[in-house]
Length: 79
Image (tube, helix red, strand yellow):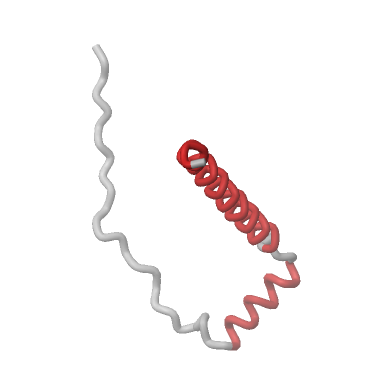
């Protein structure tokens, strides 16, 4: 009996880990299925709600300037 337990405990561990991974993957797929893209009327309702809660302000500051400007680097020509 002792030899049987010593042989099969890795198999039991692998099966348990596979079951946990399967349940984790199924849970992720189910949560992604619920997050379908919103319809146009729902998007406008969400925007109106955000404006009414003050999350979007008319007096918002202008967009931030880039820290430094990008300069074009000349491409070396192969000879």
